[in-house]
Image (cartoon, rainbow, N blue to C red):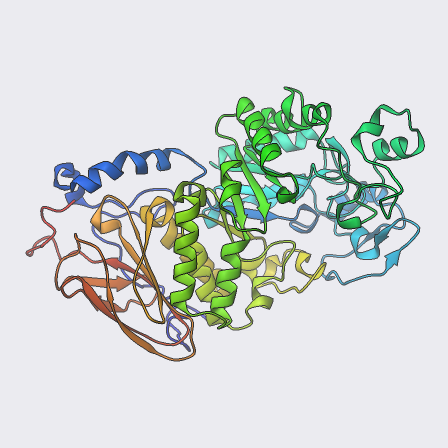
Length: 547
């Protein structure tokens, strides 16, 4: 399905939709400006107070950045020669799969203590990954985030054997540095996955500690008959012995010391860490890790995997993986809550957390631990609504590799399939929709760093993203229900003129402002991104003295 073919209103994006305002740019990372904005004296007192706040957000690369999430083993296929050269790195019972095979649930291998699907590999690594960066750059991505690359036994590598070493099947520390440099040349950054709450049962340190009570590694783990495995393991998973983070000497090696794991990789050039099971650390240890990272790199981005309500966690770290908001979007699209309910929940979350922390948090729909988007929402119009919210709510959108190809996948390990590069064609509606939404977002300063204001509705979800410039305002209107809805909504914006038009950047639909209100008559399962449209410059403009 190509742009211009619309089996459902608001589902397919139009190639020629909504021409950009005069003087605007649709370049990723560039604010939209208009000729009359040069007259900075036309702003209100509220605008002038907001201007330095927005300036600080714009100068902070972490605010509203777009992240692309890669499972390294499954992203870019190695050549036959490359695979043959590293085949010895996958000794039995490990298995190498071909790129056209899909991961499936396996059986428990009691002799090695893992499931068979955990030791099936597709052969991608840090060198092959770099061959896919042209595609990532073209999407308009700011940050590449990788699942763990530490030396480990399994394909997912959440069972680290050595934090300081890169897994040999992925490469070396030098390959990490080369990737950092490649990304830097593309004006992108690299973030890694830090799994410091637990290691793997095959880690030499754990094996020695288990066998020798006098080993210096003994303090890293907690042993005792009170534990089902004989040692404290994450959720009693025997392959994941927990690290004794209560021990400051261990924390010094992991993040406090200059040559620690966290600070060492930051010195190699990575820009930040996503922390696995961050809720297990508690508030104080997360704050300590964050401070240590900032001692090495003041603008380091520390984001935690937090499935809880995000509020107090943002006192300790820069951002969270916003599973709370993901659940709200999921329930909205599946009809379990109304748009108005979803709006109130999101507004109160932002009020509780503060928008600065939310802007540095990850807006995610799917990842390596969840169903893929196309499986979660089989209907295209539902995926459309979810992705519009991902791109327009305050925060940093996280794109899981393959969503642009329309890849499907259920529970573990099905959501971790090899990248389907053949599906990235101009007639793939998933690819075209994501590209268009990223273009809209990249060309909108308000969507990247603006404040959010909820609009009063009965059924619809409607909110505004705004800055100190009237023409940058965006209104997002969502009808996630299965019926058309018509509501009169107060826009709550003093600078938008009477009888001025708003135009939807997705469908081209126009709505007229009347006395600060607009009537939204929006089809079922439809999302709008409305922007003000200035009158032609050679005619009368009510915005002539408005910043």
